[in-house]
Length: 230
Image (cartoon, rainbow, N blue to C red; front, side, top):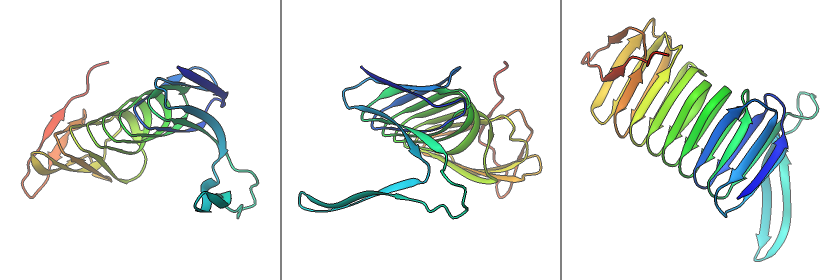
């Protein structure tokens, strides 16, 4: 197994890209540590957030130019914030500081636990986000299981190819639209300030301790569960 680690600080921005599956855990420390569980390679680097692309042109095997493009410093703020980038050719495990802000991409499964920052995640197959403070964007080609404290945005959409379990603890005012294997239904929590759309190729399970009001045209409710006692 290949291992790498880098000093990142208490609340780093971390981007993780895996060709296979990746498990991410929060830990009490200031290092990002990664372990590849396959032979497809591992790379851990520190990059600038403004480094957005690599321009490359070639004719046959002859490279005409190969350079990185950076965003201009239009506001005169100097150097941009740094991002830790972890690249796994196959599958692996990553430990990050608890307060990290994550962007996770995986060709197969994503499993994230114990993150006090924001998590954005995109998986080709299954996804599980547990004990996460803030949910950003998320989509999964297979099942999705989300348990977090809060989420960003007032108009959001989450999609899963299979079953979708959705639990946002502070979701106390939302208009919820669900389209799953059983059809379409709408409901309101509180005043309905936020707009939440859940799309699933399987069943959607909404987990909440709030009062749910069914909405027209059919006044139908789908699968709703109370959160487990802690």
